Each structure stands twice: as structure tokens, then as C-alpha cells.
Image 1 (cartoon, rainbow, N blue to C red):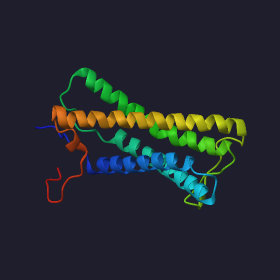
Image 2: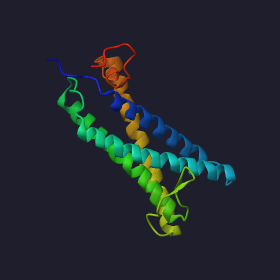
Image 3: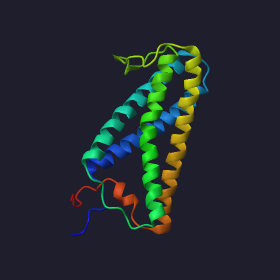
Image 4: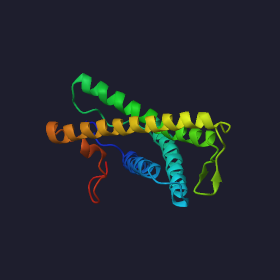
Length: 183
């Protein structure tokens, strides 16, 4: 029996939705911090927070899915590459949680509540503390930079597998085409 080498449709959908949301949050975060204080900047901060909380919830769903569904068999590769892949995936999973949580704590410490989609107020995780807020701003930014670096490494590995090794790694995470076998 040939092992399944493709991720499930659910895993693929979660992966690409998370990727889109994370890239949007990073781009928005970089863009909004360069703006002068204005109502537009405050609106973008709220959108950034909404993305962060959505990413956090999606990360919980993703982790639950991963814990209850076996991934496809690993592709043949040297042991060091397998270890590097597992490490980098673990790092990204940790940052999927750490970045939005750090942002939520930063927002709480800065005295700006997180109100998801303008209707669901979330509890403050810490009491307002301006000095702590400034420190947490740097922590959130540093973790976001680490996530950006981990994503860049992830993309470099995908490019290496796709164009150098030509081992079909990318096709494992691409959506199935309509009419194709949905095994």
C-alpha cells in the first residue's frame, strides 16, 4: 500500500488561510507603525488586533487538527533536513501563538483594550502599565520579526525542494483540483 503523501483538504485550507492572515498582519503592522497618529492609524491598529486574535484562534484549530490527524508520510530526505524541518515547523507553531499573545499583552499594558471586530471585548491580560507596555511593544515586534524570518526560511526550503530537489514537496500542500481523485 502506498502511503498518502498529500495533506488533507482541511489541513491545506487551514495552512493557506493562516498564511494569508499572517502575511496580512505583518504587512499591516509594518505599514501602520509608520503612520502619524490619526483616526485611520487607530482603525488599522484595530484591524491588526483582529487579525492577531483570528490567527491565535486559527492556530488553536490548526494545532487541534494536527494533534488528531496524522500528517502524510515524510518525503525521503537526509536526517538533518528532516530534523531542520521539524524544528522550523515547531518554531513557527510557537510563534503563531507567541506573536498574537504578546500583542494582546502589549495592548493590555498600554491601556488599549482588544475588541474583536468592534463587538467582542477581550479581557485585559495585564493591568495598564506604560513602562511594561513599551517593553512589550519591543517583545511583540521582535517576535514578529522572528516569525517573518522563520517564514522566509520556510519559503526558501519550499523553493529548494521544488526547484532543486524536484521532489514534489509543494504539491503536498496545494489544493486538490476539481475532478481529481480526492483520496
